[in-house]
Image (cartoon, rainbow, N blue to C red; front, side):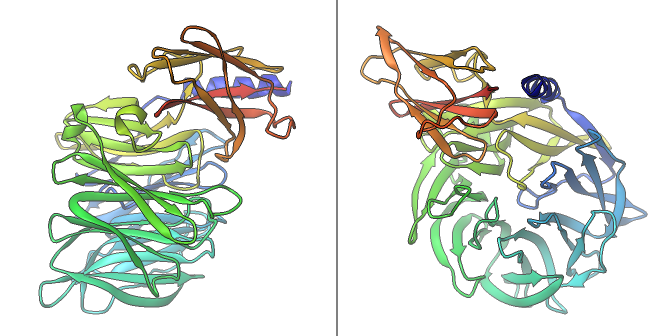
Length: 476
């Protein structure tokens, strides 16, 4: 019965995975802007929360709606506050934080807090009085501290990056971090699984420059990790479930050649950067909008890209773009703008995202859920890698036979099996049966010979410097 329920649940889930759902309408053409302001988050029970901007009675207002995981349905949109540029953050215990820019002049940065997403405490003003402020971004760390960044317009026409820390709905500190001629974008990321208090952030400033930073002491000090000419900086940060000694962050930005670039940042006793690695040409040359999702080290991460009227969810296995990139789903339409992807809570198997479709005077907000990994046995969407992997049976109870066909000799495949915490549970070395064909069986045992729990696993297949991942189900 346990096997049947798991398999049935996965089949039902998979059948609804790729549907686009209209969840709300708005009178505002920038209902879900901007890419680093998180308009969508998940809680620990899988409920989904969305905020967006509407325009009613000549006022910008913040509305929200919720997907109830137990009922499997969206509720109606409801009013939270007057204001614009909202962004959500969620704590380990599912406490909700809403940051927004007020409508009054000079604009203030407001913080609201809620335990249930429907009733909110009175707003706190975070910004300095008498200054015009905008573009708040926020995230929560392992200590439960809310870290907030925004930009402030100064009297001398410069702009400053301001930081505030909030605990238990009280502002603990507020300080100026940078002052630039112009700040046009801000990104922020704490740990996806609330393991540590490291804070990664990035700026786009002076029109065409980006810089990435990290702080481990709540902005008492910080290190510059990388700077370049570019735009659209975004960050994801994660590590193993047990500790953050092997933690890593991924940075994306669009360089001055209008190509998407990736960097990988590793954490041991200190931080260092590998990259940037430029995505090759083809359709990626025209990308002008990007936002990043969960990072599942060392498997990879997914992100949304938008260009030439095409919104796509992509999964990257690493920084060798020509070998590691997989486009999972495409949505086309000339009116697609401002996609936003759910950052927390961490989910190993799928992504949740929204976007606005501006068609004439109608501004429709759509939601979609997409898989991060492809089931084994499904046609390989990554043609041209030079190898393919199949497995049967799937689901399996006793053992699964994994078969790999390799086009070029001299690169035997290696298989790594990961659980849904992105932990490596088993490494397999297939044996060659004939030219270009390899096979190996897995009986659901980890490296110590202990049976792994029932559930979904990902097989990472590496051939030389090329990789691909496939999902399987173990039902002992």
